[in-house]
Length: 398
Image (tube, rainbow, N blue to C red):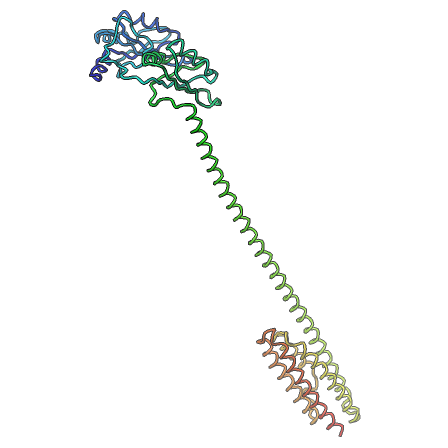
């Protein structure tokens, strides 16, 4: 039955737009009163704008049809637009006292005792809001003004002592308080006690603190993990730098050894060329003199060869080939000497060169840890070679 009543009210209601903000509700009722008896009216819209809109309900549908003929007429500074309303008026700002609604078909239905008020000016205090509604509606049981003061508008819940007072509060929808137009509607839930609200706020703040503490712990754990990762990376970087320094030192040592070996090879080649020139310049001298010179040259050659053998372990095969070639090319008597002693000396030199060549090949394949064994074997070979040379010298003297 209530839905049928709402449909009948909708056919009796018109919707008007483009109303000049200077037009009051009394002027609007007077203008549309020529069409028929007006049951209710509601003028809506912000007073800060130049245009507003309204709903007007007539007692008969034929009066609403007459109001539609005023579409496009001038009212104030603008031409109003009148068209049928798709809904009935809720919370009218004006109601005709001579037109009463049956209680069985109450358009508001069963009203709760609490209303919800929004779009409250932030400068309006709780005392001012309470005083306004108590003067216009009746006694207030409870009022809660909520919202952030940093925003331009706030909201409130107002609980009255009976339904008639709540109905009167709903009729104040669209009232301007301060710089804002109030929007009043039925509340879907009653107001909670302030103690319950305080308890809920404390619970919410406690939960937020717990959540923030958990987030803080997680962030601290993440920071500690990042610091540990940075520390490990710095340690690995230090180890890498130390390894680079060690490798650079080894490379410098090898370069120094190669430089010393090259100098020794050059000195050996110079000594060999000098001895060969001296022997070639005096071929008809005394046998004793020649033997003495050959002995001295042999001894010098042996000493240089021993020096070369001790330091040639780390030289490359390329440098050894160059030294052998220089020794062979700088010896002018390699084709002229034909005496038994010279042949024996050439054979011993050839044996030494073969032995050194084989040692160099082995030394290139040896690791650093095997150098000591190689040196010991080389010293033994030098001792045996010196004893054999001494025997040769003894035989030459005889």
